[in-house]
Image 1: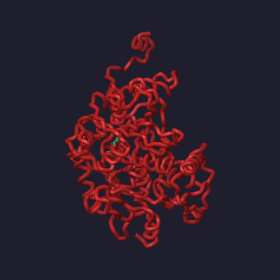
Image 2 (image 1 turned 120 degrees about the vertical axis):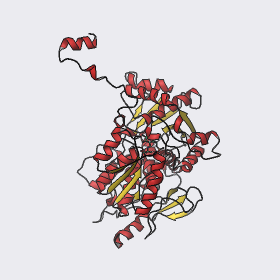
Image 3 (image 1 turned 180 degrees about the vertical axis):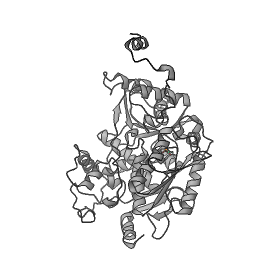
Image 4 (image 1 turned 90 degrees about the vertical axis):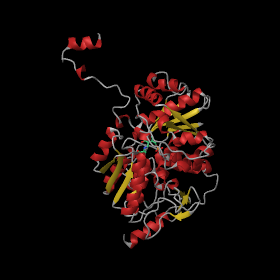
Length: 474
Ligand code: F0G
């Protein structure tokens, strides 16, 4: 690593500290000459603490190196909500064309970097982005879904909710919400001069990392639980050129091993244990709030596995509330599969102890027994007056069938969202008329087998009208 780069890293990461979520110890964002730090000396997971970034003007003046010259230092007053809303709304306005400043455009077009002051202060030329985000928010409740959209309304009917929205994170570049954290993680890897990156994954993180590493020209190594990664996800990692290591164990084994290998071999670790990835995933929260014109919903419901997403969205809501971007904190409901429910078990004892299980579920994305971000996510549930719910595989598959048949579609783990909210409505925890946003985390095509009716081979029809008439019973 040359000295200019080292100085740039120090500058870029100066406003950032890493705080241990267990013992409160504080570390600099990057320690010169040190290997990257993913954990506190006590073993605790780290959380990014950033002073708010200088505000970047709508038309930045860039020097030759791409650094912004006219950033305005702002002393963020506690009631600055309106000006932040205006800035983010300006950036997302209109159709983006490539005639202007490409770098600024790329950043404004990304549903992550549009909120860059709240995500990560890095010189623009280090940013590696597809761009990501800008995913659909579908009104599917009985009241907020037009009667003509019969298919989508079935979702509201199934959930028993009048004002329901589904945010489809499967519409990200690699088909899952992971891209939002990955653009930030890989940008840090780039800034640190990493030549190789790695993760353990149930499939989506690895697909995303493989794609971003390919874009950045880095070697990518992914640790996967053998036989437990859906076909579409595995195909992506292979196609993007990652080295795949299939572990004869579960995700929790893969996670433990990748951390050891990364520390030993100086490979940059990009699981959600990496605190910078969580910062990028916060953008799901900011973007959905912006799509709702900054009117916070009453509830946010999402599937929970390693608990990175629960931590990230909760942090985004906390920051949005602190900045007066929104007037109240949504309550968060994390949904686990019954056979992979350590967080639910802890919640049921008021978090008296941290549980772990041997995980089993058809929703392989959330087949995780010992979630890394437990403490971060616990804080989110407590702070937001949230809940943790569990759903059976049968309930997940029933909900998936409704989402699929509506024409939206999602992968099995995502359907835990709908299954969970239905249960919470039935139990009276979520009220029928409350405004609810559910997150669909992955694309239908990630897993083309689980919960999808498979056609028998003999369903091939002769290429003649009589045969077709007979099949269609016309
Ligand atoms: N939904 C999908 C589709 C996922 O891929 C994951 C996690 C989750 C939900 C749970 O999110 O872990 O932040 O609580 N997938 C990880 C992976 C573990 O390796 O792709 P979480």
